[in-house]
Length: 389
Ligand code: GAF
Image (tube, rainbow, N blue to C red; front, top):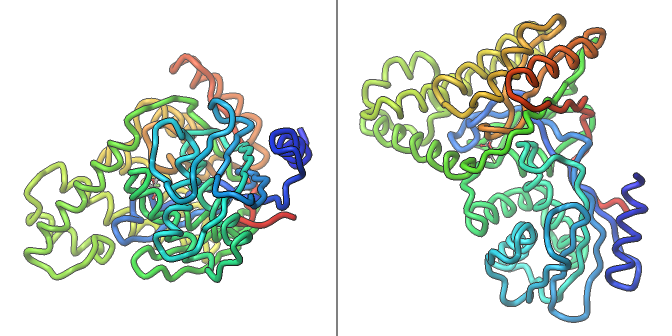
């Protein structure tokens, strides 16, 4: 399907005139550095060329009217620009509405309504940041229509705030950053403590990045996520009794060995160990890539998965099955879960001449064990959120 043509057509049908502008916002895949962002550590994501498309126009009244071509909902969801609340009936539109409300709270004059029609080709709930993609798309709409003087990093931070305070998911900055700041063929190495970042051109020689979707649906993702975050905060508080640090990301392996005794709850010891060691792995993985050592990069990806499985406990049977099957296949450099976990996707680096056997074997063995099939996407690394026309 020609997405742009379709979205323009649907917009015109719903609102009886053509849309003024078209926008695109990607999803993301995180190569390594999981559950490190809210612990003041590093992440290493890239934007992918699957994402959310939006057609939008300013209105003369104060209504925000949202319609999706592919999200389950009933017709156009409407809200008043001066009375935005998180309401259950607003369903997916709580993401764009949360962004509007957050911009208003930051003093941006959003005083007129707008129409927004969206279409996403990211699998929903697959841990590829469909929410952040929609949030950053809305931020780009607001910037364009209200001629806001705001840079992308500020938009990223406000979208994270919308998700934290309006939606109630206590996420870190990884997703909104990767979606907003993405650059074609590059990954981003971000220090979530200082927000210093740099782009690294991804040179994977004869390999591809393969995203494999478990296709499993888990409902406890947000509550378990918020629980992991609070367990890390508890560990940090205990450590702060003996060492003046602001985040777990400030510690290295040796510090952790020395300080872990201060953490009272044994579960929190494991959560903090993941946060500290994953951050160190991410720093090492980026140097490995810079030194052209893809093998070491892959090994660190595998270790990351093991730590997320054993210490952080955010994988589950489907993700573990995918990762373990991937490790057994020829031509796999590394494989791990990506994103928040529980369900969602793995990311694997696979030699191009083994791609077909990788997909066939993993699909067959995963289906035998889990009872339904996974899905594969070869990631094409694309740009961040942008105005298309
Ligand atoms: C989710 C969150 F939204 C991110 O902020 C990040 O913590 C990630 O899980 C885990 O690395 O995607």
